[in-house]
Length: 244
Length: 244
Image (cartoon, rainbow over the protein chains, first blue to last red):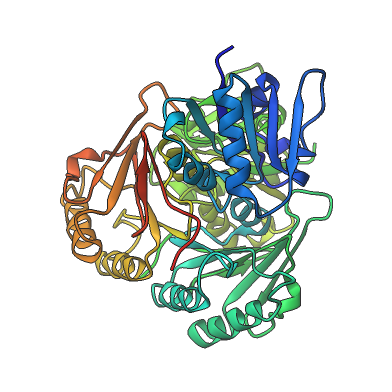
């Protein structure tokens, strides 16, 4: 048996947002590797081995997946959303750097619907013009770099999508983010809190920056900030295609 | 019959990247509205009316779709990629602003795989850390704003995805973009040209900014620029999850 390794995006939650390409890879797999709640989304079947693991062991998980594929298994590493957006694809390549013996393996990255796009669709089209995606987890980079990026993105008048806005270990961080954004963009700027997008728990709330409170976001929330032209129409919020 | 309007993302080209949610909407539709090549991707069937239209008539097309839905038709406006990323969703809401009589219509935006995410997956994970998406078409904004956003995004050390890098009407624009990026990021920065992603014509090419030439991009190309940490591993290019 020739092994291969796929890193697949399961989308934000709904099975109706899993691409046929990803479903086909899951159907051919012998092994499913990933963070516990994502592996739980894959239906068990005879002969399929599930390898759920805890958060924050991404490189170890990727290395184990490489080794299984090198041994001839057909391995799918599952990610939520899109694997290339703050998810498992980069961790896989970090692991691959330490394993030149695995460079000839068949590896494929299968894209998925990332949370910000599902959230934007549920709210309207707040990312309808130039935008950026920023991960607010300060596990990944120093706070000073987060602040610098927020200020430069505001100066560039980009719409913004924020992943991991708030965690138990640093509940005050998102409050600081909102203060910086109010300072840089003004209190009237529209901000959308999108929780558990595409699941039965979905909740979409758009307010102004002046009205925004840190507790409007939790670990299942993606946050979208409009640019200076973002506005409401009926129940929707959108960013026009034209600027300047 | 109660009409509705859906704006659906068909993804970058492959049918394996069309979500089940979008396929279900297409199956229930009475009318398909969109730019000619996107409508051509929808299979004809008895009773399904196809309304292909030319480029650059987005608001007229959206208004016609609203009117059909208001008259009781089940209308899908098709977009390539994701409808909320430089595509038809914003045009729909622009049209809706002029039609308050349509604000109570059932409208849904269905996300899709946008070109930059399919391109990133084909290349590895070049958007694996904070990034921005910039539309280089200067039909939509003045050149000075494009230049300003490029310089600020480079200063923020964001990875970047560029849509519409090159068109017949302004072939010199992308040459200027490459000059600005070389000036701001240096010649060693990695840049990926991804043409016709997910189709049989797919071609992925990663070079340094010093090696990049404007003719590497055409109208079917999305361009991805790494951040200062983006690197190669084996045949892949990726951006590490950690920074600073």
